Amino acid sequence: MQVTMIGAGYVGLVSGACFADFGHHVTCIDKDAGRIAALRRGHIPIFEPGLVDLVETNTRQGRLEFAMEPTGIGDADAVFIAVGTPSRRGDGHADLTYIYGVVREIAPLLSPTAIVVTKSTVPIGTGDEIERILREERPDAEMQVVSNPEFLREGAAIYDFKHPDRIVVGSDDARARAVVAEVYRPLYLNAAPILNVSRRTAELIKYAANAFLATKITFINEIADLCECVGADVQDVARGMGLDNRIGAKFLHAGPGFGGSCLPKDTTALIKTAHDYGAQLRIVETVAAVNDQRKRAMARKVVAALDGSIRGRTIAVLGLTFKPNTDDTRDSPSIPLITALNDLGAVVRSYDPAGMEQAKPHLPNVIYCDSAYAAAEGADAVVIATEWEQFRALDLERLRRIMARPVIVDLRNIYRADEMQRANFRYLAVGRPDVEHSPTPPAANRQKSKRPAAVE
Ligand code: UGA
Image 1 (cartoon, protein in one colour):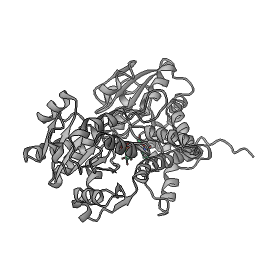
Image 2: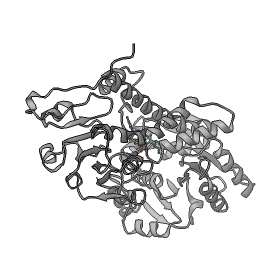
Image 3: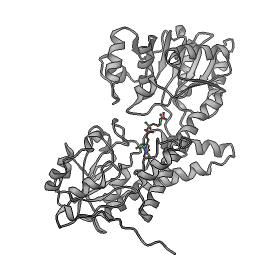
Image 4: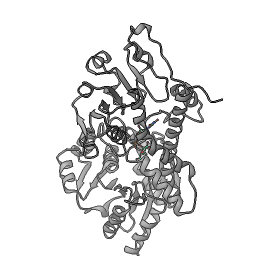
């Protein structure tokens, strides 16, 4: 099939390369001349494991092309729109300028029976507006507008594309459904369920799914706070809950709060949509507010680890991206956390395997280092803010030798209390009992929880 992908950003590039890998002929269109030139040279402007090879193979085999102009779009069996929908400045609504701009531009070039598929995350009703614009520009044509939201996680996007839990197709038109099903046929043969729903329903499924994931994370984060008060272990609580199939084990990892380009933006946009329609989403509103406060509040944990003050202390923060395997620092918990540490008078050293350049404009008062150990040199505490693989097995002996004090604050719960006890670190995690450093030999240490007495 001939597929046109408008937008060679994160979603467009991953989806376009995967469609080409299925055997379709894909043209990715983007207005950014530098981006298209780089892609044609084989340079991938985003960090996503496996994407360089996928683009290279499919370009070499002639199935994937890049262009600035949508010439040839009239021959496409399906035209996907995957341009950005950032939060609009001031009110948090999704900004649809790019989407509507693209639709007006391509309208005269489309075949009269074109299938236009929206992959960008767009507010409910956007498909109706796209259809209205197309009818206005081409009153004679019989184009169809379909919503086909993506559920890709950064860092695992190619896997997610090729192994979807479901493919959501929002359209009431049988011809449009058949064309989109044909584009996804290789996955369909592998039994990925296609969910045919109305267009508005498809648009809402995307937001509802992200809002629910955000709710699950925020729920376990608050349970983690309670665990710290009562002396319970949130990882065991999460396991005990997650083994119930009705709940499920995923997205129950307590941490410093969710970040990234999707969950924060999409929860805010969903709340705005609900307000516009006079509906109430009080749970989602609370989730957004709780998560916003949580990131900066993580600095309190660092203050507690250093006995009440961090003024003049050196803190090493490991991880700047919102999660591992990405260079994306958008809404990363590390940013408000480090800002708070700076505000409290600490000197912050940091290392991230991929996100340091992106973080620099937001965090000018940080000493950027070229390894975790370089960051830890002379530090009074190491804070693990992102669970990169390379932070999971740090040489604790070496850390203790180079640090000013043996203190680790693990905001991602990637170490076990017993190993920290053996290495004789003071160790604070999220929703788990603290481990105290002891001047006596490690064997004599005891894991202690600083459990306050319950208020009777
Ligand atoms: C998210 C969704 O997971 C995808 O399904 C969706 O397609 C995507 O948004 C999107 O709308 O495009 P992503 O933003 O890449 O994907 O990241 P997630 O893996 O969902 O993680 C989001 C944040 O939640 C990260 O900061 C992560 O550290 C945090 N998180 C996640 C937790 O704190 N605990 C968890 O148990 C899971």
